[in-house]
Image (cartoon, rainbow, N blue to C red):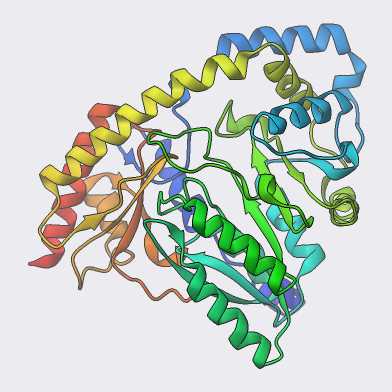
Length: 402
């Protein structure tokens, strides 16, 4: 049977994730993986989570083990409001919040309720690959805005906005990761943040702010969330407990205008009814008991040391003509091999011959124009694996240059 003819047009625009494809290598013991955005599994607070889980099941019983409200558990919603408040983000109440099955679900639901074919979406270039994959099935026109040390070049963004307004194109939103941007590691300066907010106001635009990494800062940089600067209800904010506690919980959240959140909730009802109540109770207890507050400084220092080991290893082993960004936080180093090296073409050889995995950088660009970039995760492997993995990676690249 020809199954292809049965698929919808939307399904035809779905693409496999380069990250998910490579993540399967992370479980093989002989592979050093720089592939996924995975927290160090050895430093997940397993004993604390085990105690919390037992207590949740005994205290909340059936409430934690049956279906819950689509918006989310009220206990967690209230804890998230307090947590955001510590970062200067104020919401009116739970009506402006929804709990997500990981922030990735937020990207998917957002695309469902906002995008039509041909709509204009502005993103950083490079940007989060899974966001591009979430938007792509709805066939928008995704326009990348270049980055520098101060984040998205908002002057170029404004020119692109003017150009598309002149062409009478429908601009839907600006997607940004302003702090510890994935994959580049840059953070947006305060001046750029202010300019971005001015642009959104001037041209009546919506901003989707994705913030999974601001909890892992290694340098003193600007971290004021755009949502904390939002006086016109133009910013919808997303974050997740995946990096902070454990990705297996699959708990994130979205905060924004009540009308938008209500539409997201309607889409979520269809998608999964509700995020796991058990996971929500565990996340709420992690906030209430101070586990998160205790855990984050410890894991932040571990990741800072790993970042520095990878930076040193790149300096030692990578061939002339290579370059990379020193990330101010987060989990990744974005690097470029010398011109002429196609990191996508050599990725499979790196895995099979040299037993090292990374994510080719081409997929992080909306126009797929950059061929020699790669994203390297430093939080998952050990320090020893980082040194050896970078040495192997340099061998692959040098072999390609011959």
